[in-house]
Length: 336
Image 1 (cartoon, rainbow, N blue to C red):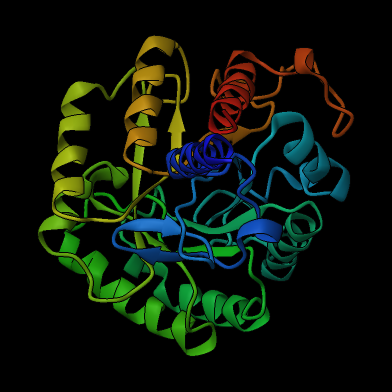
Image 2: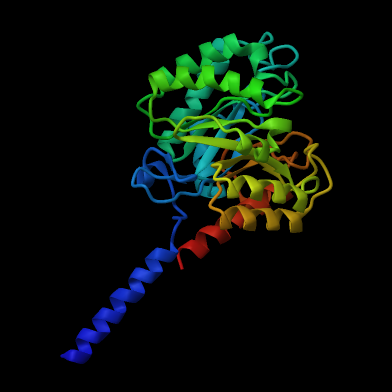
């Protein structure tokens, strides 16, 4: 009897230790983790336990309409294995490309909301990304941003799968100016969706989270964007990130690639693997650029592939296959 009791006690202890090792669940999805929150610099589920999101970003809703379907989102979740998809709304661009520069605002906005719906149906988190790039200073189109995020946060207030990214890559602008913009937009979002998770872009195309760490914003449930491309950003960049981590800054990689920062060759897979190991060790979620077949090596779909659903492994480029393999391996390790 005593022997049986000892076996049961040891078994319970081993089970407890195994559970403790599983800080993250490879199936971290809205159905299992609910609405997200930030606790002690870590992205967490509704239960307060850590979450890691691994996903991919669309190239831009103005040129990716064909992929914003229920069927495509099913493949994102089931074939690629992603638990988060980033809907990129370019603010600036020629013709109808930019939301703030001649694009069909009503249509582009609805595509974003369609993505929220398809994400919900396919059990994925969705990032609504206000994709500042060529315009540099997010204050340039702040009135459009105010209108967009007011409308989106009212419509998505009861959604547990939505994350707001309020300025993709601020550049050639001071951090204080980004903070001033963020103060305005965060207040608007929180007025409608009080507990939402919000990602704030950081200086130099969201590469300098260490600068933000020296003077962070004073709001709960904030994350700070980090972007990198493995062929361009190496150990020096990781050292800057480590300084921000040591200061307690909550970080989210809302864009990265296994290419150069141009989105094109060369690939640097060894460096990409180092980055992912570093991020995972620090509990940082990451979203790869990009789900498209544009003529860039960062595009996840082969240029010759015409389909928009029913994807198979061979339909994906080097970038896409690397992402699928990485997510599969990470998720498998978490279940051990």
